[in-house]
Length: 607
Image (cartoon, rainbow, N blue to C red):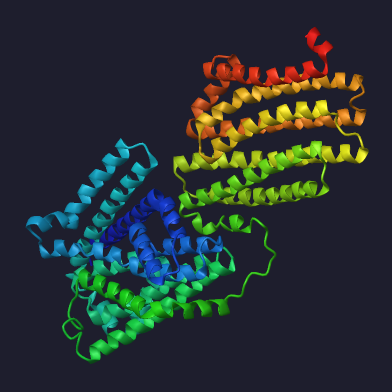
């Protein structure tokens, strides 16, 4: 046995597996957000869902990934279990596309000439590697790098296949494979076990079938020996998917894994019985005991999956009912934002775009709830309502729950292999989750001050309400820009926050000074004056939190600009800031001074 050929075989195998992984990761990174939006719109038609599952899996080259994404969407109540049935079946068929691509190695073995020369793996591999390198070097955007990774993965995959088939041919001449192939011919059960173990270890049906296709180059594989191996592959990859679907611990997510297992068990039975019947009736005599190539393996895999899908599509609801019998429903009480919380699914970790999209949606909900709480809390200053106070208190608790879930999810997600762009987004979300929770905390603080003033029976005079109203409007403008900065990733909106935040600081200082006049005129009691000062302080801190939200957005897209921006503001060198600050100060201080003039004419004249 030639040790060099053995090393070359395993080296080719490593390149093949790495290339397949790189190509799949590039496809997922470049398209997962779009795929998720498409999958969310799937209809109740099993046929349409089947085609969707087939298309998605053919695109991202992984039935595991497609089924896990589906399980995550079901757990988040974006899809129902019934809507997912066709997707699961389509994913199983879609994974056979990889084998149809790999069968191009037959062109190398057959000595293709002319136009077909272009499609030989020995030609495609270097072309894909060159193109991938150029794309990665030339394009800065994430989508461009993803395309480059796909091309590089494609090139490495075919380089590995060419290397493997070459070493298999060399080893075949030594007769090393003859005993193994002879045993496979005589023992379908052993072939089934080998297929199961290989797919369990590799966690990929496509990769396992690809290795089988590479070994077909030895000329020792027959149809008799490979059909049971394929059946074993169906089982092995199903076990892997079932385990992964159970990680999320949601009942519907586990049901997706059970349905996939049931489908593949039925597929194994159909394949084995179908092959035996075709052989008995003489339809397989031309290939049964004769050497086969990678094309026959690819076609057998595709036909087995496609025929099984066609047979079982009408009976998918039976699998659904069985899954509900096996996995009982969740019994824990549901939080009103449970759907958003469920979307933080560990199944999305392998597809960062989906994980970050789920985080963005929950953060958006956190901000909106906190913003609504602030509005309700400020409304309580003029007219106290115990029901509204309790609602603010309840929603503050919900924001805390969302914050805890997000913080834990982000912390675990940070351990994944993320791109530079995804890491920057993750860092922004770490900052924002803290600020959004603080906004809700401040809303409750403001509501508690209103409750104390109400219980003490010392309401604010109308003049105070007018002053709070002016500051409330200014704070609302700050919050609007903070929301736009986060939701739309708008650096422009983020930069509109700082001048407004400075005006808030100035206005709060003037209002605190003027509070002494209200106290001296006995419009405010000591209790009311203390509460009023606290409310002003909380409103100023809301503005500060919004400033942090804006800076987190700026930092995400340009960390250097973030530092320069802050330094320029402190030095007064930012013309835009100065212009917008003066405009906002004139607007809000003009209204505030007019209010003071009307209420304290003597004080206004002294100023």
